[in-house]
Length: 469
Image (cartoon, rainbow, N blue to C red; front, top):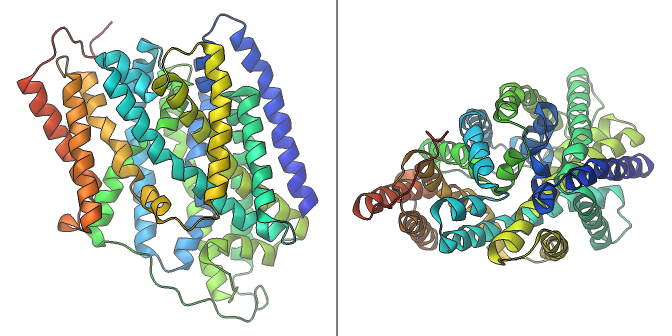
């Protein structure tokens, strides 16, 4: 089991080394070195972009969290997950090409790059960069928490912190070797293993459905249903996260890496093929319940069924697929956070300095994320819950940049600020306004404030992106 796991990890590192060749070639042809590092210089065709952007949607939360939610009786969780994933694709299909055109127009590598250039506002750049960093920080911890569950089962006698440290070093190696190119090529291996593992375990669960000895004699634990706020909350959350998906910083990096807008749309057209995973993951969760496979916690149910049905060396491959899913999300978050510091918060760094300091930022981020897995910090969970509440608030400004020539920077700043104040107030007060997700209400407030500021203080000499030659 350990040997097959280590073999896959070594293969992934070898792929990252191989990807470095194209990274050096891109730098040697007069490209912006930093942009080549963070967004691969816009070199990816439809196939590689597909694995990077669509495949990266499905992380360790897919393989562990989704069947765990089903196992725990989370019907509302299933409704939310399917609705969000199904709507996010069409949103990205229409918005993605315009994000790509906006990035190409201004040579952007991050969301704040675009907002600074289009609105000529350093304040807007700082606000969006700082907000994105705060919202992205817990994502690293969540990936390490998922990997902690897997690695502790793989090598129970080893110190967990040492195992997480090794995972952090591997993530750093991916990024340091070739930036986004390494993530893209390793994502191909991750997706093949992820889909293969789910198809294999799901098919075996179906084959053994009526068998008598697949699991242990212990009954599945009685677990409360997944928390939810009723149908209005579920639907408003689906809408919020579907449109917010296009505004996630690492998704902008993926979009900027595409060779042309058609690559983005082609990837979204075939993205629903990945949905075959979810019925099989549901089968796995129900199989564990039917056969009384005891699990220490719901998130372990997929691995528990794999261990019950597969030989040890194949379980090692499944565990490698799960860990690679977490490592790929980690690497993309690293490549999103680093330029927010080196390009946006700290001005004036050259291309080489941006890459050098980005590696320092990434190392610090990974170390803090690992340490945070040991701490019982309520703030981490709270920030994770409000990720989409905050990340979507750049949407009115972006849509305005596309359509409204006279939208001022002060309007975008005021809209984001008003939404932020509302969301923080609702969270602190513990209010559920009409059962609607407060992030969606905040988005509406944001749009209204932006519209009012545009009407009262229109920008002179501005130009909308749509309509430019």
